Length: 292
Image (cartoon, rainbow, N blue to C red; front, side, top):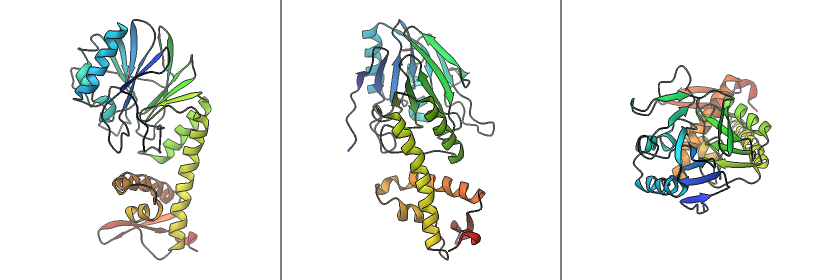
């Protein structure tokens, strides 16, 4: 069972976590948003989902009790449960702020999920934000999405991991190849703590990052082993989920199937598996040279 996360938590003298109050199987307890800094002008990392009155109430309470303003809203990536709340707080709770996000890839048209009245500034890899009490550095970490970033707080070696690494379980991704590169990049940052986009703080981050890398490698091995043991059988993505993901709830099968698809795409490029159209579906089989 997922741990209970309070609506508002002062994590350090520099960081207050405000829970997005949007729990679901994919968001765990909800989206974590973070108010960062010690001075009057602060940074809000992510803004939860659109139209969540409970979140807006908690955020307003924190802003008023701290007697602060939001100078910047930094978005870890474009997904609605991180971006949606900007529409509710821009110009109201965040009266004179700048909204930042990394650009999506050139072939993706989902960059701005916000109204045209809310202009976006584009983040760059290595960019730094300095406010009273905190220095944040941007690290572009595509994979979960093409625009995903994590932020390192230089003072406390805290890493805000967005959806690249979660407080429990593992993350979904758009592209496995770039996601694995991003995990390696995060490992090389050697954070002392990870504050994730969902779930609780990770106090042993290196162990968790290594687990994520090993987990993906192990999933790949499981897919190959399943196909090798059944060389004449055709598997759909969902067939492979049912054979491999024996420890998750059925409602999470679609998300797991997307992960399997990304593994298969990678393996297909490496000519380790092949896809075949059968009965109107894309099905998979071990490549001929890899058959037992």
